[in-house]
Length: 109
Image (tube, rainbow, N blue to C red; front, side, top):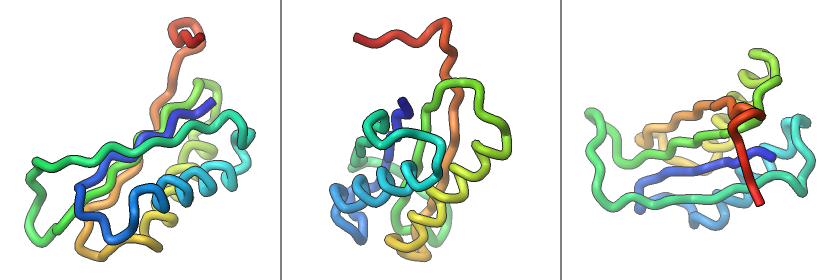
């Protein structure tokens, strides 16, 4: 059920759809989720400001249902970050954050 949201500068060194596909697969490869339950999307930003020496950015927010261990969340973060490193420039700012979603609050149709 994870929602993987890729926020990025619009000048990626890879096509956004390719990045979505690679991150989607890396999420599945973590072994934490069924392929049919993963939802991955990307949002490009035109206006942004970065720190010194950074040309672009990619930030992944992985929103998952609570109940996973810290170790599992760390594994997912590392796996997604490793995937980003393959497809991005050294001058890109790369980050990943895993967010817990509460069963009692989350709703969907």
